[in-house]
Image (cartoon, rainbow, N blue to C red; front, side):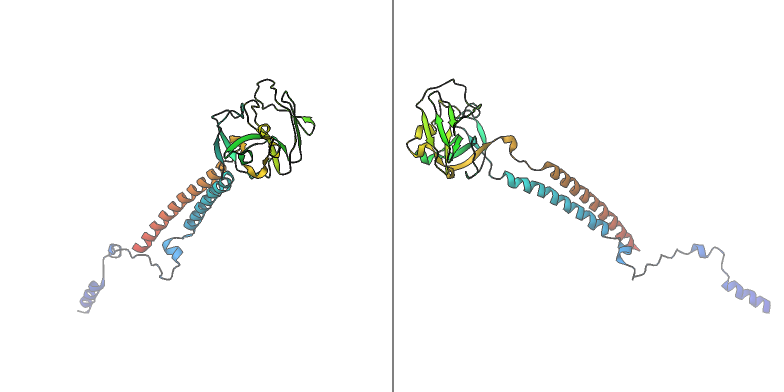
Length: 253
């Protein structure tokens, strides 16, 4: 009787060998005190990528602003006469740099207000002499400045012309100007009665320049900046995607 009772008790507690494998696997334990970087994924890659993108944008903007400031004020002048042929024929467009006249030198082609000549308009002519210079023009049209014959390869090739001789000393702070097409230009020679045909430096409003010399935006820095910004944004997108997936896995756990 005793043995039978023992077997019954053993039957009550004995389980099949496969019982443990049939139970669902327990989930791994994640401590609520674990660092956020381990549970949700680190934010460092995302922050670094966004920083790279910002640096790229700054480089591109600086490249534009630095040269953009240098090009500010340049404008186009439409030449309305043949006084400056052949270099600036009538109807041509001339790139003009704004200046105040203080830095004008002999040989510069300038735009100036012709109020000193009694005209309420703007002309374009070449500076032949500055304050203190002595100018002598003989009948065949040869020009001497301070006793030296002026070499003028820019002149319109019209051959010798005969006009009354000119001899003036340019007052300080003033300029003596001639057109490159001497036969067609109503320049300082035509206004000798007032200040020896000169105009004030302060009347200068601009100087003709070669269009190719006008600064353009620094395309190298623009390209480097744009490439860096694009790389940073792509890296930020990848980092954000990876972090989002890690965060979703952690939340499901």
